[in-house]
Length: 262
Image (cartoon, rainbow, N blue to C red; front, side, top):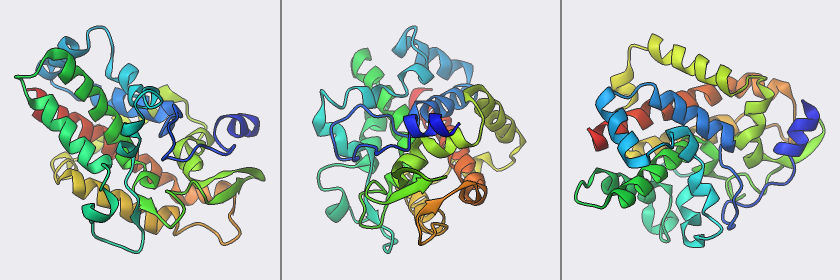
């Protein structure tokens, strides 16, 4: 497990402002969120997804937005918004001047819901929505402590070097010991058990982003030791929140697709 973590996630990960095809939330995280969301769609919405994507599943297209970043460098800011952790208000004139995950997701939802657009345009919007919902719920894509969303905060995980952003993208998911299927099963079970789905999926895109921002402040940085030397005790503290972020992303992805496609 330690070797896998070192190779896959805890080496220095690229800055989120770079043009790179690195996976945000990690490929596994995005696929899990998409798979859980897909299982909660109504038959009518599933048919519309199939009409737009053909033989591709939501899980398969969930990492497309990262894969095209090298060829579309102007979209790099769409994956995050660096809201300082000391702030509690979204100030688009300061943090979203060149576009950000909030404005990008709002725009792609509009395009997806516009039935006057060609199918290919709406299909691309759907790919963006699937991906950006996932990015927005990864707290390091919204909170910032002067370190570019954790990219410049150098940490160790059981003595292995890395950065805080990479740890939250993939390292912590791998450290749970659960594979993709196990994560999907767990989240689907928890969603079925919840009685507050309406409340869970209410609110605006900005509300959801600021929720992630609060998590970055209170949990990601809040439980960070001054030594920046992390071990499984950090995972024990943050794991419930990590899993809750994925659950919320899954439920909200299903909800926005229902609204846009039905």
